[in-house]
Image 1 (cartoon, rainbow, N blue to C red):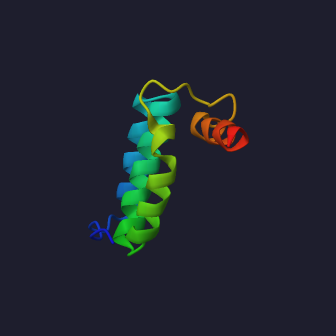
Image 2: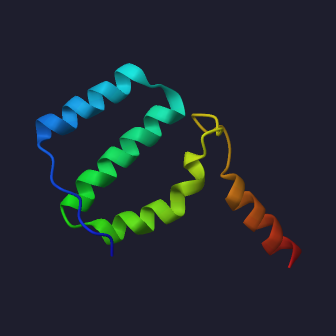
Amino acid sequence: MTKPAPLMSAQEFADRARVIVETMQGHAAHRAIDLLTNDVLRGLGYGEGIDIFEAMVGHWHDADAPYPHGGPCPDCEREAVSRVAA
């Protein structure tokens, strides 16, 4: 389990979210909000669940990935093709 992050106030969360949406766009903004929210949840003791979430969605946070993603998950598609081939 990951170590809980220090708690932030609701105002700090809102301020940081506001900066993200004012200075970023598209996939970068989505990723930043995800990471900010993950920090809050870790601070509340949900680190193990966040580790599970991040392990599953890490490929969605590739810097060069378009946002919003216009089709099926590339990793899921590769896995489906290999299952059919097996």
